[in-house]
Length: 175
Image (cartoon, rainbow, N blue to C red; front, side, top):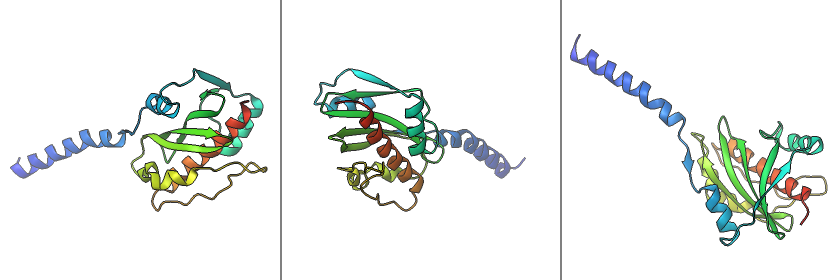
């Protein structure tokens, strides 16, 4: 065997070993616990559970286009605002997002954990700031159209659906 052939084989072995690590990488921009604490001035209320009843499941499915991955959703509510840590698939991996709803409108949204290989631009304030003050109309639609990001369409759509979901779920709990 020539030196060149040996080097090529070594290179192929390294590529095979390293590529899966990049495919499964996740970027943690903020731990959910930190987001929760920060959103409630370091004194978060106890978490609560919203069980997805048959009617709620139908509403969630209409928003997401599929069933939610769990039978219950944890949230935090201090009587003035609710906070939701929700996940939605971008292209193939879940995007973990923190969403704060106050007075039935979005106060804050932040991508906490991003696992996709493309579309990470949705984490930046230039994108997430456009969700501020969005509400649901009487026909259960967002009051504002969200501008997309070239190359991040699936991630943009995922965050838009999560925003819609958080507003819908907030309507289901009493303040």
